[in-house]
Amino acid sequence: MFQNMDERLYFTIGSSLVHTLTFTIFNALLFMIDYLQWFKKYKIQPNSYPDMKLIRQCIRDNIIGHLIVAPIAAYFAYPLYVSYGMSVSGPLPPCLLYTSDA
Picture (cartoon, rainbow, N blue to C red):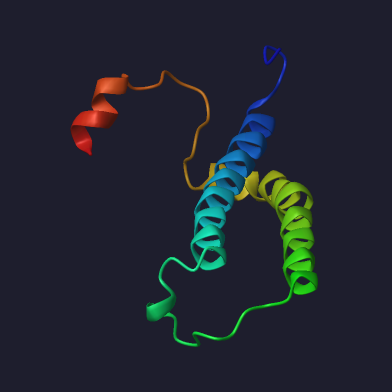
């Protein structure tokens, strides 16, 4: 599937996926904590909650940003990263290296 893709496309897809997944997972957790009111006593404004229309608009704007704007920005920023010495190709380090460095 990925045999004929160039490094620029690998970089675009990879950076967009990492950015979108980390943002989505972290913020979904924060939304759930706020929605279920798990830490209500620690809120700075304890009785302030956004309406669902505002939340839907925020989700829509983030989807547009993460699925359209971020990949385009990554695609056109690739030459800048390459000029600083970044490379997408090459062997990956072994998995034990990741766990031992953590």
